[in-house]
Amino acid sequence: MKYFARAPGKMIITGEHFVVHGSFALAAAIDKGALVKAEAFEDIEVKSKELGLVASDIKVPHPLKPTIEAIKATLEFIGEKRGVKVEINSDIPASSGLGSSSAVAVATVAATSSALGHDLSPEEIVHLATISERITHGKPSGIDVNVSVYGGVILFKIGEKVKLIKLDRDIEFLVGYSGIERQTSKMVAKFSEMKRMYPNFFASLVSSSSCLTEIATDALTKNDLTTLGSIMSLFHVVLNQMGVSIEELDYMVEKALEVGCIGAKLTGAGGGGCIIALPKSGEARIVAEHLKKKGMNISIVKIPCMGVEVWKEER
Ligand code: PMV
Image 1 (cartoon, rainbow, N blue to C red):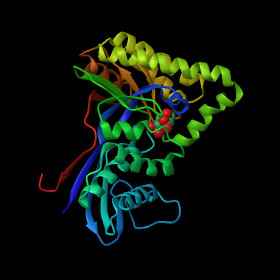
Image 2: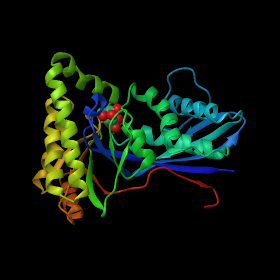
Image 3: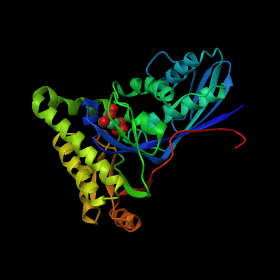
Image 4: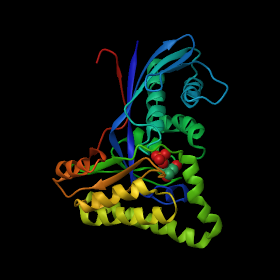
């Protein structure tokens, strides 16, 4: 029997980087994601349509190694002797700050366990997908995997239970893609240099990030877009000062504000990847058109979006 799992990518609304050092961060699932098909097999075989690669067990660094390790961990966890044949399709650009590797890991774990007749809890999927994320990113905070599993909007802090944030209406954001790939682990290392040089100053920034993220969460739930947008823009300024923005991202943030967005910032690790911008209510389409005319690669994301879903082939 073939099983499918679809897991969403994410955008971090506030608190990226600071979250690695103990701040709250606010993130939302997006409508782009990874679709994984899995069926029981005598061995492990992984095929990625996007990468044009097929692999079985791999000992050396390889783009599919994190996925293979997540599968091996899943098989061991559920006590399964059989293997699995997995096919991955993702519509999230890799290394863009939109959680592509987490979405692949989450969908792979969920599809693998289901194809072999085991239902995993959300906590178990988070745990197993994190094994793959550690190979890809070193020491991730865990925010990407959690938002991909639970979906919707989450308030996340390392070591605390994930808070699911309820919205009573849909909210539209814009995502602007720079087309520049970068490595999360390098950007995390760059950001963390400041901690070594100015530990007390750094600690006060982490605590401010946490407070601002809680205020932003409250503003989001009350549909107070003005407060939310101001906090987003403030985060961009600080992330820029911390050395993780680049000219292309600053340019997109500037243009988004110029055409009337309430707030805009880089999202994810920076150094390339994407920005997000918050348009005024009902203005997403018009503002997106203005930005496209300026040559920007823009899409509209409506939140909240679903977390990981699994279904049998018949569906
Ligand atoms: O890999 P990205 O670009 O989605 O960034 C993840 C967010 C960081 O806070 C920079 C790192 C982390 O592990 O939380």
